Image (cartoon, rainbow, N blue to C red; front, side, top):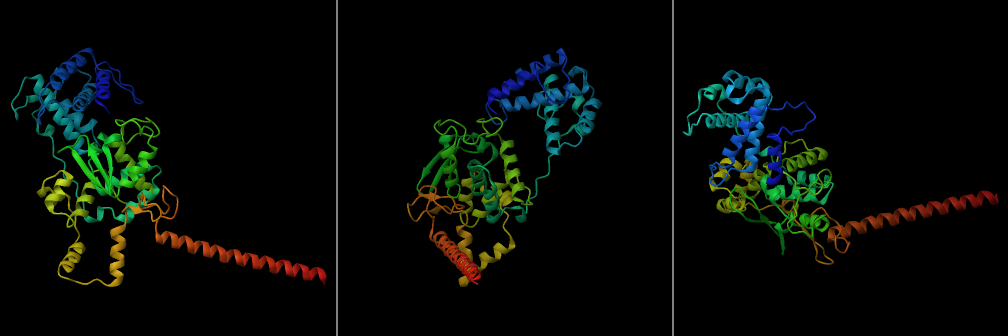
Length: 408
């Protein structure tokens, strides 16, 4: 959602213009007046990271305070501490710890403003209660078994309904960009080069620049060939194709799309956008230096080990054998080569066009893409010829028998 849309949502809150399928309680004039004053203060307040507070943060704060005002049905200055506690313990029951903690931060900051307090750890009595202190959510534990394999990713790609979905899945697996980075991409964010493409990140949590893509490059190429607004460089790269057609996909839209694809593929694993970072960083651990792996993903070297890598004991044992000169058998060499080539682009043997891994026929010349496909096609044709000959022989037999019966 753009800043202009966030501004429109803020306007709806401050004018009781929110419409919903559920019953919405309008705020009183006094409540609206207080929220308007807080909005003017908050949007001009310096951000903790420098600069101004984001419009989205202003909207989220006002949505939280609107819920509190609608629940208590009182001017904010007349709300009592026990009512705020009840709001969090009863009204928000069932919400995640992260959501409740985020709302507590908003409410405590709001009452600090109302009471003119500026010191970092000082709070007015109304919110100075242990039950209103935000709790840090426990980090999600991810094991090596939670990571998706190449075969599972191929299964996801084969169930995708559109070239755009294939591009999203392939980028998710290959480089694991952040949800917000998906949403910042435009048509001109992709630059194709020999052997892959550069994906320029418009808005990044750490630093702007480009990331290299090899596996995902053919899928991006196929998507851009049919993108409804491919001639507009500033059009969003990933868009709604049904409802909200042409609108930029938001973080939740990317996440829900991945969940739907996994469900259709029949994979029984939990998926979310950020998991792609664990997969990518773990896959490249050992192939790149720790520093290069960290720089590629916009994190610090210590974060690579402490947060993201999920190498298995089996992988560590294999690495130990490899560095100490163990010689692979012929079967092991073939299997290792096949695994290494999975998801890598295929070059057409006829015209040289680079195609995605899941293609057997070239998107440019429509011929078999490689020798295995050509041989397989030859085998199919040979089998069809044998079956045709058998059918003809059977037909001739029936005709001869029919003629003999007529003669007799």
